[in-house]
Length: 390
Figure 1: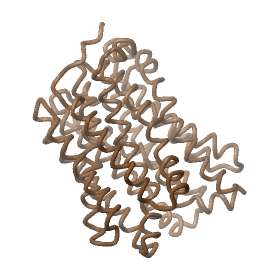
Figure 2: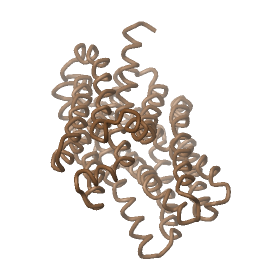
Figure 3: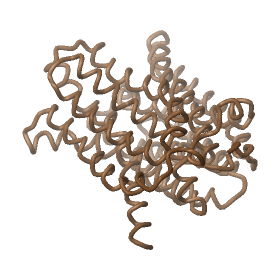
Figure 4: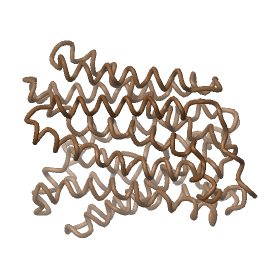
């Protein structure tokens, strides 16, 4: 591998690592942030809500930006805006806290949509491998941020504001590595996405969007409520946290391996179905016997959910004929998908409240995975969206 190729891969991987720390690194510090800024629990929760809403709302900006500036320069701008948002939210006052969080999430939304197009554009012969690298780096970045922000705070003594500023450093480093590629990239033309109209008229788009949204919903439900489920089942708080960490850790390896295998076949249906079935078994384990071999349920759930996420992004990269089409499909699937996903934790919390147990919510979750399997069956079949017009 030449130095130029190595720099491209390193910049791409480090950019992917920056797609979740701004969100995942917030939760462990949230109590401290609320005390310092003077926020109520509702106000503290609204920070994450604002960021998730931005992920869904601002993703559709990406085709316009990529058409005007090119995918490479759009990605570079996203990294710089993430760094600016993280630095801003560490300043004094609630308004800048929300503004900085929204700014970082908007940049993440644009980068989420850009990355599958980057894969198609720069790695057309290694889509399966580089999708695996991309997804595993996203998952690893989230896991690292959630695990390390508190130890970093204690070690440095900087407080949550300083830690927030430190999270901007990897984004700036990724921008530095990506800068040569952005300077070489063309400001539009073949880098620009095709119009939304052609994508919206395709059935494939809606199958992929349903797969993306439903697998994200089941993931965010578990991310939000799994520790609570285990606490109510009788486990200690530290054990509940370790179980959540275990399922997230399993997803890192799964996200790297599954696209490499699935990308070698014209049809991804067997892998999508296998991932959905494993997710079903994970949900069933948590529903029927949460404290019996809980580590096993977490491993099964991690494999199923990690594979589902990776496969959804792999299919986004594979189905269109060119990078422009990938960006357009990614904009629709991820924007609508994150809106669907944002409803999951809220809905499950409401069902828990009105039913008095986790039986009804988890049963509904099984139904959601069933619909996900149907969507995955159609999304995973061989097929190509039409090539976008020059």
